[in-house]
Image (cartoon, rainbow, N blue to C red; front, side):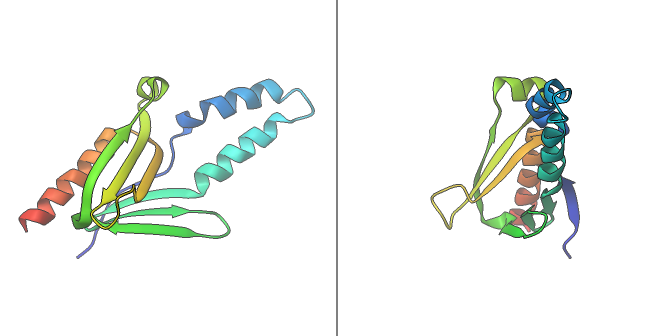
Length: 130
């Protein structure tokens, strides 16, 4: 029986540059509003889900792109964080499977990426032991 374990969107704090420029440009005929609108739409259009058996990414507001992989097929995972990302505890997770030689799923700009990766690893270990 598949159950949802976690669901995340890109972190608000990963958009700090857009908020900064939006705030600077707000007095200029409201140009900053475009930065704020971009952040809201971009963040709303991305969702990352971990279930007991799959990792799912959903992208898009009007059109949808859904990628999913079975946790048991995961070959490797990497957490990528820049210096700034480490300061605000955000980052990316790249997930590869044995089916391809490239990264199959990129989970971008989430809070606590190591925690998210560990959750997937724990579930993967559980599935292997089953």
